[in-house]
Image (cartoon, rainbow, N blue to C red; front, side, top):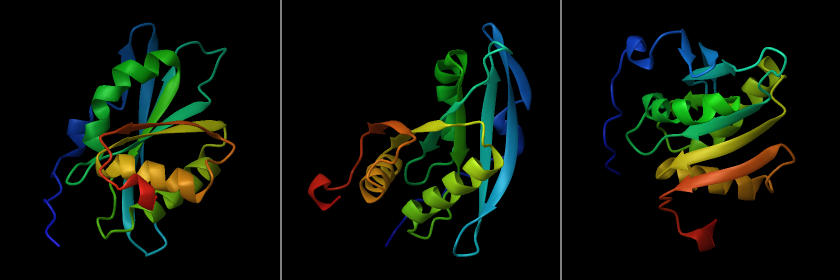
Length: 159
């Protein structure tokens, strides 16, 4: 199996920890999740505050493509944060257990950030296939609002 090398990046490339957008502000929180295979997954969540009286309660979980990383979620911030939707991105362990990594990150996130009652999955390429397989495996789940599958490359009959 030949895989493209994951993009190397610095924490500075993720941007400022706090920044303004439109009529709101956002803060980035970085954290790590130890997956079920004892591998560290690095994660970031960008939490918007558009109106202090209305806290964000939905998170978009971005799933990068093969060779990608959490930097690939940055273009989504300007589209989702103004709608009071937080964005969560993480780097897969890269060992072929993407579905398990997603489950482990979502479980950790829901325990640490209980204010988020619902989520959506936004995947690109391998991440889109992971989102579809995850939803099929869990029968959607009551808190999953939708899936945005950008160019999934899985055979849909095998999902």
